[in-house]
Image (cartoon, rainbow, N blue to C red):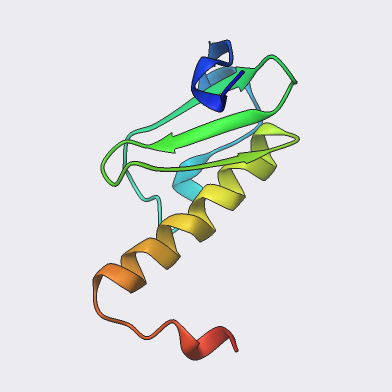
Amino acid sequence: MSSEDEETEPVALEDVDADPTEYDALGDAEVTMRVNEHGLYIVDHEETGVSSQGQTPADAVANLAEAVASHEQAMSGGSGDDWL
């Protein structure tokens, strides 16, 4: 079974302890969350199409914020070398 075929169930961000607005990279962007059949929380940044996951809703959102920041840096021409 491919990851595209995995069953997921939507999760309302209001119902979990995860607030995307706490992260500058997410700001007021539209973020959606779902949980897959393995219990992993998957979050999507609708504007960029970037997704991430985590064991908890808060971990998933924190991981998404980092992924979106990296994506935005790459798209703006940043070298990305600042973490080396």
